[in-house]
Amino acid sequence: MIKTILKSVREYKRDTFLTMALSISEVIFEILIPLTMSDLIDYGVYGGDMPSVVKFGVILLVEALLQLTIGMFSARLSARTAAGFSANLREDMYKRVQTFSFSNIDKFSTSSIITRLTTDTARIQQAYQMIMRMAIRSPFRMIFAMIVAFKISHRISLVFLIAIPILALVLYLVAIKAHPYFEKAFTTYDELNQIVQENVRGIRVVKTFNQQETEINKFSTVSQKIYYYFIRAIHTTAANNPAMQLCVYGINLVICWLGAQAIVASGNNPDVGLTTGNLMALISYTMAILMSLMMLSMSMVMIIISMSSAERIAEILTEQSDIVNPEDPVYEVKDGDIQYNHVHFAYSSKADKEVLNDINLHFRSGQTIGILGATGSSKSSLVQLIPRLYDVTKGELLVGGVDVRSYDLTSLRDAVSMVLQKNELFAGTIKDNLRWGNPEATDEEIVEVCRMACADEFIERKQEKYDFMIEQGGVNVSGGQKQRLCIARALLKKPKILILDDSTSAVDTRTDALIQKSFREYIPDTTKIIIAQRVASVQAADQIVLMNDGRVEDCGSHEELLARNAEYRSIYESQTRKGDE
Image (cartoon, rainbow, N blue to C red; front, side):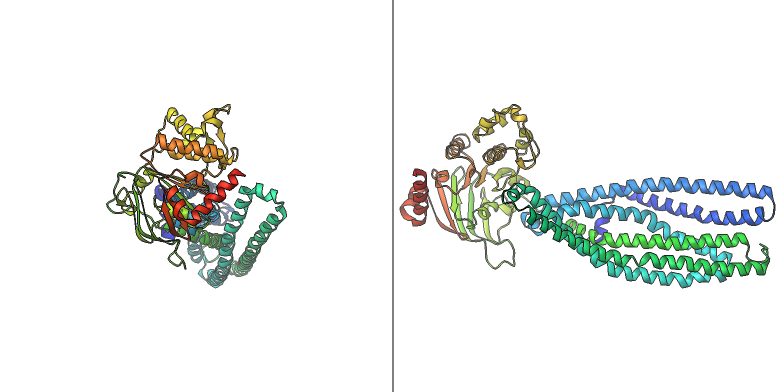
C-alpha cells in the first residue's frame, strides 16, 4: 500500500530527502544551544568572565539564527513538497478512474471516488508533511539529546530509560485501538457524500414530493454515525497527552532532585562534577526528549488517521480495468457490420442469472435497427457490449468482421457513437459540449449536425446561439433539447455505428420523425441502432429486434413482425389506438 502511494512522489523525491536533511540539521543546532548556554553560565556568569559571556553569547546567537533559517526553509519546502505530492496523487487516481470499465465503476460508488480524491488525499498530504518534519525531527532530536544528556550525567539520564518504554507502550495501545474507529468514520463519509450528491442533483424531486424533512433525517443519521466514530477515536487518543504530560513533569522533578544533590556534592565545580549550567542543559534535554515523544505521538496519531485514507486511495490506484487493449490490437474498424454469435453476458461472475442469454443477431453495415422490449428486458445491455463498455461473458461479438476484444479501445470507441439513456451535458457553451464529439470540428460542421438532430431550431432562438452557456448537468435546457444536443454531439464523431439508447423519448413525434429522416438521408452508410419505447420511432427500420428477459423474442421488419408476432402486434395496436385517441 505504502509503496503504491509513494509512486506519486515522483519529481518531489529530491525535495523530500532535502527536507528531511534540513530537519536533521535543524535538530543539531537545537541540541547545541543548551550546551552553549551551559558554558555561558558556568564559565561566563559564575566565573565572572565578561569575554567568555560575549564569546558564548555570540555563538549562541549564531546557532539560534542558523536554526531559525534552516527551520523556516525546511517548513516552506515541506509544505510545497506535500502539496505537490497530493496533487500527483489526485491526478494519478483521476487518470486511473478514467481507465475503468463500467464494471470497475460499479464497484466504487461516485461519492466514494469523490471522497478519496478530496478528503482522503488531504489527510495524506497532512500526514506526509508531518512525517517530513515532525516524524523525522522527533526521533533524531530524542537520540541526540539522550547522547548529550548521558555525556553530561549518565546516572541521572538513566531516568529516561524508564519513561520511554512506558510512553511507547501507551502509544502502541492508543494506535491499535483508535485505527478501527477512524476506518469506519472514513467509510461512512462515502455514505454521507452520496446522500448530499443525490439530494442536490434531485432537489426538484425532493421539493415536489415535499420530502425535505426525510432527507434532513437521512443526513442527520449518517452525520451522527461519523460523530460517534470520531468521538470514540478521540476519546481513545485523548489518553496520549495526559500520559506524556505525566512523564514530562515527573522526570523533570526527578532530574531536578538528583541534579540539585549532585551540584551540592560537587560544589558547582565544572572540573569536579555537575554544575548549574549542566543541570539547566539536562532540564532542556529532558524537555527536548519528552517533547520529541509528544510530537512523535502526534505524528503517529496523524499517521493512524491517514492509514485508513491510504488504504482507500491504494484501492483506486491498484484497481485494474476489466477491459484492456489486446497485445496486438486492430486499429481500423472496416465498417458498421455487427454480428452476435451465441453471446451471453452477466454483470458479475457471482450473478445468479445472466443478463443476456444466447444472442444471435446480424446487422449489416448501413442498416437501421430498432430494438423494442419491456423495461428490464436488457435492451441497453445488448448495445453496451458493442463499444466494449462491458465484455461478453461467453460467445463473440464481431464489428466489421473482427471480434471487439481484438480492437484497440480508442479506435473501436471512435468508430461507435452512443447516446446513453442518461446522457450528460457539461458546464460550458453549446459549442464546447458538441466538440466533445470532435475537438477539431468547424462551426459549419456543428451547425450541420445540429440541423440533423433538429437542435438548430431552439439554438437559433437564443441570443447567444451556439455560445449559449449550458449549466452543469444541462439543467437550463429542457429534456428534449438536451437529448437533441447529445445526438448532435454523437453525430459530430462521424461514426460507423450510431446507437441511440431511448434518446428521443423526450422529443415529440414530429421531431422524432424528422431526426429519423435526417439519418436516412445524411448518414446512409452508418449503422443506426435505435432503442425506443414507441413503435413509431423504429417502424421504418430494416430490422426490429423484440427483446424479452434477456433473450431475442423475434427479429424482422415491421410488416413481418405485425404478421407473425402477437406481442409486437399488441404493442403496435395499443400505441396506435392511444395516438388516435
